[in-house]
Amino acid sequence: RGVYARFLGALVDDEEVEPSDVSKLAALRRGLGLGWKATESIHVAEAASLAGEEAPGAELPEPLSKLLWASMTLFSTSRGSASADELLSTLGLSEARARGAVNEVSAPLYRAALAQAVGRYNRTQTPLVLQTVRKALNLPEEAAQAVHQDVYDSQLAKCLPSPGDDGAADAELSDETKALLSELEGVLQIRGAAQRVHARTIPLYRSSAAALLEAPTSVGDPGGAWAALALRQQGLALPTERAKAVLQE
Image (tube, rainbow, N blue to C red):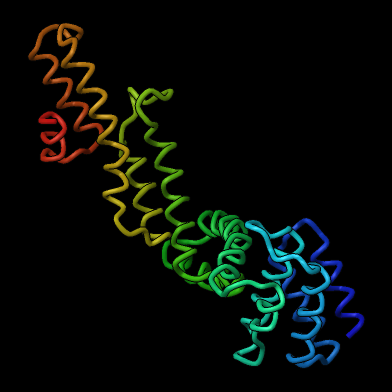
């Protein structure tokens, strides 16, 4: 028990969080022949030592946050033999608060793994790989999907800057960009991807329309302004009904 306790203490004192931290704990626990109840008690004792007598504030200290993450992630592999109930009681945390804290630690690790998986595996393999990563990080599907959406939105922002940003006036949905976004949509299983694309293209079209309609002679004549708008709509792959709605605002 002493060996495991010292290793756990050193692990939570380390500012770096690695996905392998939990597997190291699991391997040491098995090597020492520790049962789950004994493991639980060591984690609870470490929590009591870190927390002291003060109730946790709005933000958990990093060592406590890491302990919570390592504990709940490790216990999730016990097939019901270990519970975090006593740990949460010791820390004065609700299940929801604890889950949120664990997700905050797991999400950046998952995002890093996601970036590697997208570049290494194809559309069929990536979801299966990410499912394994989520399980290893004890990250719920809902939290993982939020990471997926953030990654997709970040790529969208690179391809389609906001009005006023550098490159916004010439930003278009080229065939290459469409292919990239389509691949990401499939790999990340993004729901409502079209709406997310429109959330970027409509403001760009609106900005172009405002500039052209305010100064139609900048393109030669009023007819030229409408032709320019038609080209802008085409370049942004904006459906006609969406473009009409912008012009009617």
